[in-house]
Image (cartoon, rainbow, N blue to C red; front, side, top):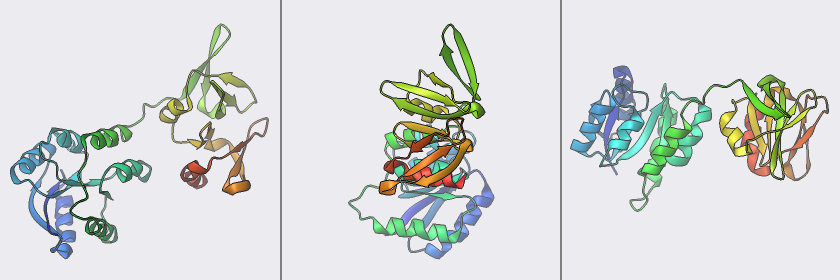
Amino acid sequence: MQYKTILIDDEPISISRMRRLLKDYDDTFDIIGEALNGQEGLEIIEELKPDLIFLDIEMPILSGFEMLAKLTYMPIVVFVTAFDQFAMKAFEENSIDYLLKPIEKSRLDRTVQKLLKFTENQSLKLSSESIQTISELLKPKKEIHSISVKNGDKILIIAFHEIAFFQADDKYVFLNTVDGKQHITNYTIANLSEKLPDSFIRISRSCIVNATRIKELERHFNGKYLVVMQDQKRSKLETGVSFHDNLKRLMEI
C-alpha cells in the first residue's frame, strides 16, 4: 500500500530532511503536501485527506496535539519529536509510532516495517482518548522540592533528599526518611508516582524509592530483587515482577 502523506513541522530543514529520507520509500509514501505550523496542518489535512502524516509536536499557532484535537478527518499519525526517551512510553502505548529528532534512517526503516505489518482491517488511527492520554503524559510535571506531612499540631516540610522511600501499608502510605523516621502521608502511591521527580522510582505496587539513596541490589527469589537503602535502618525493599521496566531504569541511574 502507498500512503498519501503530509509532512508537518515548523522547521523547514526538518521537512527537507524527511523528504530526503522518504525518497528511499517511494513505494510506501506519496508526499502530497507539507505544513509549517498546526493551523496550516489542520487546513491541508481537511482539504487533501491524507492517509498518513508525520507530525511535529512543538509548533507555533497550534501545537501538534491542539491540531489533532480539531480535526474532523483523522489520518494515521507518526509523531516526530525531540522528547526524551522516558516520555516515549506514552507514544508506544497510544500511537502507531514515533521518531526522535534527529531522525536516523535505521529508525525510519522500523516505522516502515511496522506500517507494512498491519492489514487493511486493523485500525492505525488515533482515537480522541489516545490523543488526550499522550498529551497529559507529556505535560511537564510541576516542579516541587519537598513533601509536607502532619506531626501532631505541626506540619513538617521534608525535602526530597531527606526521603529514603514511600511504602503503603494497609490504608496508609508512610514516608520514611534517611534518618529512620516515619510519617503518615495523605497521598496514595499512585498520586506520588505522578507528583514526584524522576529520581523516585516505583519498584512495586506498594513502594517508591529515592534512587539517589540506594546502596545496592540483592538478587531475590522468583526473579525479584531486594533494594537495599542507604538509610539508618538499612531497609531492604522487595521489587515487584510487573515493575521490572522501572528496575531497568533504576539500574541506569
